[in-house]
Amino acid sequence: MAGKQAGGAVTENLSGRLYRFWSVLFLTPEGRPKSTLLLYSFCLSFVLLAIYGVAYYFLIDALEYALASSPTFVRNVAECLVPGIVGTAVCCLLYALPHKDRRVIPVSYLWLWLYGVLSLVVMAVLCRGDGEAFRLFLYLYALLVPVGLVSGTAAVFWLYLHRGRKS
Image 1 (tube, rainbow, N blue to C red):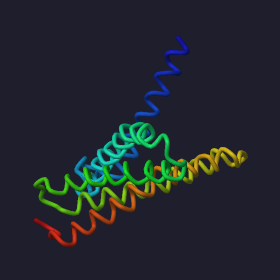
Image 2: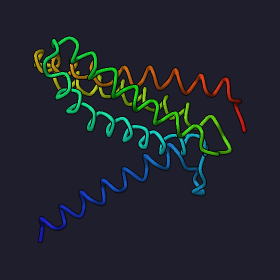
Image 3: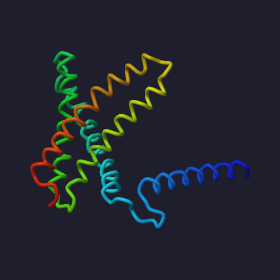
Image 4: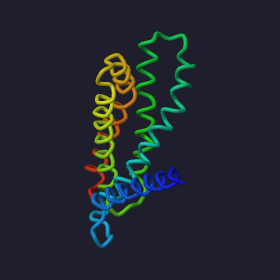
């Protein structure tokens, strides 16, 4: 019985913390959104993250198989560039969808930059005693994260500036 109460308290505590986080960041005391741009871009950033994740998931193995006889450097460069650019192309297709505020997708990329920086900080804290684990993380991070972030941000901000700020 005590375990159920403790588990319920943990669940209630976690849900309370999540609600406070959500309300402080996005909602006024009346429950209205503080900024629809902030709220929509935050939610869309998870969609963009999923698009990049799917691109890497499906393309890494295919590239590894296709370039099996190539030197390691060529494989690494292809596995770094191709999924990031394909993910960027799919994310840029979202910009062609009709929507009122063209700022949502560029601001979503700013959220992705924040996630990237936070993941570096969290891993630095988690691996503070293990330099080898952090170097391995940095290697994988450098292969997977920068290409999508840089190419996506550049493409979306270029689209934002050249296709009009508001439609």
